[in-house]
Structure formats: structure tokens, C-alpha cells
Image (cartoon, rainbow, N blue to C red; front, side, top):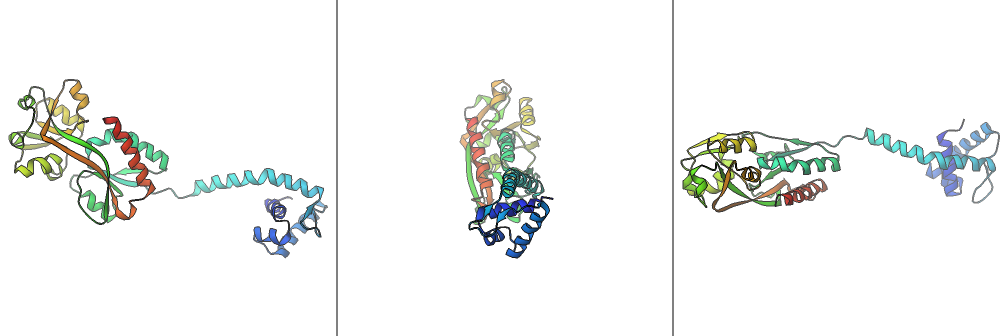
Length: 296
């Protein structure tokens, strides 16, 4: 007998004080609103308000219905909003590539926190030969975490944190006795690296290549733990960020030495320039910077 539309109409009449104002609020004509209320009064066999009063004065029966409206309408609207939220489209995943392979382990807490806060999934894109920053420009990626800056007006690089790349060797390796490693000392070594093109490795691009030096051989390991274990077994030498080998050095499995006077790099978040101020990226960068301070 009493419908939600009746409660909404009466509530609008209470708020505006006139039939015309109520009609505008519920998007009806004055005649349609008047007909709706007259029909309800007929069902209830009781008048709900005094038609010639300005502002409108409600009868006892009208006040009862207003009390019901005050109780029900907020609850109905709250449930409607929840249902609309369930039907809302799910935000598309953010496609991410991380060129700092040893960063993935300690970045995981920051990335998980961002997913929870943003309500958005992260999808990692990997590959040995693809060019992440080119993929960023083409729209296949949304974000690249990299230390390799390729100047472009279409890419914005947000600095995240600095780190040092160090040579990691077994304690009994001859290079463990040296305090500083020159590029030439790696010419006879097997370099253990992640499965990416040699030209994309920091140690090759920024340490060996400028000195026109190449390692004797390159062998791949799938992750940081494997690279450390291979180095500890004497299968070669590897180059990792300073934080990556710290735990293993404390256990006596490996030692690390500086490359030259120090091979320092800076990790950046690369995004399309037009999206540099996106809150999604800015919030993720804040979480990454916070997490990086734990490494110091």
C-alpha cells in the first residue's frame, strides 16, 4: 500500500514546503505529484497534509509517514549505494615491469599495500628481450621501475632511491682479497646474471663496456638466491645491489667488493609524461620510498 515513492514525495514536501518545490525535487510535474498523493490518501482514507497551508502543514497521519520516511529512506539509500558499488566496473590492472630484479623481494610489501589501498591489481610483465620503456610508450605497460634512463619528452622519470652495485664472490675467490675491483679484473671471470640481455646489465653498460672489457662468459640464474648460491659455490662472480647480498655476507657465504670507486645507481619510476601527476602512481612511489628506507 505504502511505496518508497510515496515516502520520497512526502519527504520532499517536508523539505521544500510547497507542491511545486517537491515536484521539482522528485522530478514530477505538479499535477502528477498531486495525483500521487491524492491516490495515497484515498488508500489510507485519511488526509496527509493541509493543501491551503503555506508552508505545507501535515496531519497526524502525514507525520506518521514522515517518521517512517526518516527511518527508512537513509537505510534504503545506503543499501542502494552498496549495490551500485558491487556493480561498478573493476579498475583495470596496472601493468608493471621491474628491471631491478633483486628489488622484487623487498618491494613486495609496498606493492601489496598499494593494491589494498588503491583497490587495483598489479600485473607483472617480464621477458628477456622486450624493451620495457618502448612498451610503456606503446601502452603495453603502465609503469617501469628502472635505473636506465632513456631521455624522452613522452616519459617522466620519478626518482625513488639510490643504491650501490657490488661484486659478490665466494670468500675463497682471489678477488675477495682485493679492496677495489677494476674492469680488467673481470675479463677472465664468468659473470653470473639474471636472464636478460647483457647490454641491459648495469655492470656491463656502466662498468665494463666503457673500459672495453667483456667477461669470459655469462651464465644465468633465475633469481637472487640462485645467483648468490652459484657465486658461493665458485661457479663465477655476480654483481648485486648492496642490500641483496647483505644477509648472505652475514652468514659467511659470500663477500662483496666495490666496483672501481663505486658503481652507484638510482632507481626511477618511469610513467607516460601525461600521467606523471596521477595519484595512483604518486601513492605507489611514496610507498616504495618508505620501504626503501628500511634497507639503509
